[in-house]
Length: 265
Image (cartoon, helix red, strand yellow):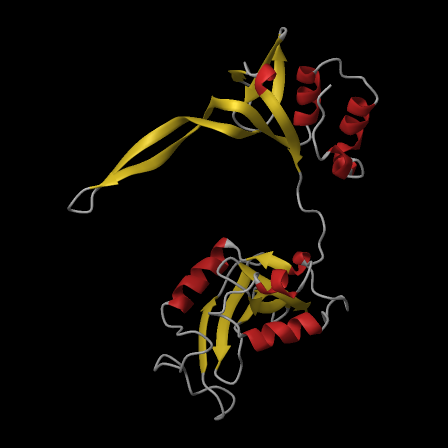
């Protein structure tokens, strides 16, 4: 029976162990059964001997742009290729079907079992450690931090947990934070550029200027969000504090979607 090429990599993944064990122990009687069992725990990428046309969730696609800049769009309902990623499978009687979305209750008939050349499980990256400095560096946007500061972070340790920074130390900026960041970017020239007139000189010290955007929550369960840059720092600060409290989570803006968590207070 044809097995996924990377099945050995999934043996020790906790939420896949049972399915992998069923397949390797021979509890699945056919390739169709195997795809159904494995499709419950992972998406499956399949290569075919020739192009096949698969139904997909309809998506808008740009076709052309006229002289006045007007775009012509069309909705794609299918995709033709020799390689596809499937969200899952199920049996309708004896017929194998594929899902167009992971939690879908309906699907389309899968008619290409004989055309499957090879397949593999789509595995998530469960290793929180960065492979090297270059992978760590790619998490940052040079608009918000200089490379020298990135190198210092890589060489240093988290003051919160004491270890090297990992992927788990990068947290998503929430909807409220993204609105604050959007306002901040309207006036922010970048850490490597000269400050503009938008920077305030009335802060603690005459030695530097500050550009800051803030959101104040008036709800007890809300968060006060601040994003700021000081001209004597080569990075941008991020804070999410409990409403009216002055305690919360602090970090550095890494990119337009994430901040690097430094500490909780």
